[in-house]
Length: 357
Image 1 (cartoon, rainbow, N blue to C red):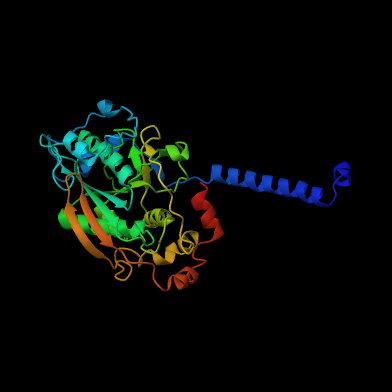
Image 2: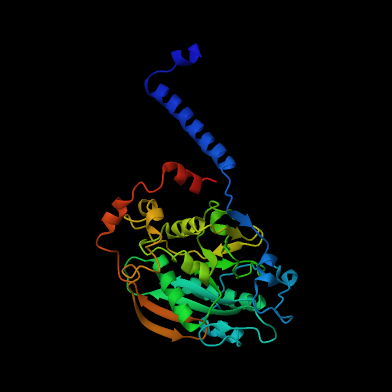
């Protein structure tokens, strides 16, 4: 030890101790993550979603998708033939508005699949080419809603999903709502697009994350929630303008409402991410707003008349989906005040337990 200190001078000494301090901190985070278990995160098989005890009007004619036959991984191909016309021709039973239901049996749930969208034509075509045959193989009664933000202002994913939910519920009593990013394409037909009594995060492994889950509390990409539970947690937050943290806010709302975050096994919840140009995060959003989620979640969402202010410009029942064109406005003038109001709603300890289990 004496020899080590005798050779340590100036910048070399500073570098020596800095590296060791960083190593100890890194090792501490690793150990913390190993022992910080996510008790509300549960892996459940697809079969658990077909529980007849949860069905009010159970009959012997309930649809029974054969999971063994569905258990074939779909190899995603950037198919240049994925045009709207070709997809429609390949799915003649899909009705205008992107609606389909099985005629030979009673489906377990009526599902609304909601896409938030702007300027993603190629990912949209690939997605529709894949999703219609998959949902039909799962024997679901479904309708696809494309909620498109007008203009070129900052994108608001959470608010678009809220608008999509409201518009979907006007068209039918949907049991299950699947909120879906348009650039994520499922690879396995066994990943049932259905809801349970809690929340179901369907993306357990995506290729752009090297088929690893980002962190256990992560609820981004694709999440299925019953219409009842979505209303109970006040939907998504409206305050996140630009990409970032609205999914973490959503996950925290579910946890605060004593909901489990369930997932399919990793081998089933695999997704391909269609490459596209990334939109930068709005500098006044992100983590600074997320730190104030706890005090804000019961008033920032579906029940917020100011935050939910929007104008539906057009609704079209197109052959493959129902298009809802909406003007969601822009960030509120007092967003700086909102960001500063709750800077310490959650502690650093809570922050670590959220991102490092």
